[in-house]
Image (cartoon, rainbow, N blue to C red; front, side, top):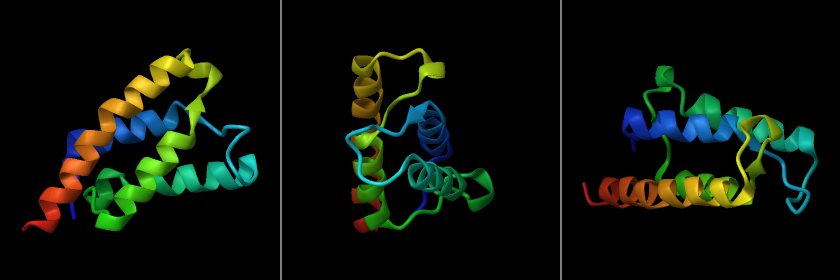
Length: 99
């Protein structure tokens, strides 16, 4: 499936403002590697092509993140930003499965 370029850009932006949570399993280095892989997957050179099932994994990944100190977001603001992305990601996933 292909995510709309605006949505892919907004998700990449959120990922850049994210940080590894102490509650998340794995090391910070493993988390950074996974985050960078998501950013690469959603890069315009890949045209936002993502497996439909990977969308659920992306939502889970975003949900486990916290805002980075440099983002200047509170955890509530981070949760709100992720909560705004989730319905759009789910809609993209569901619309691709009906085509």
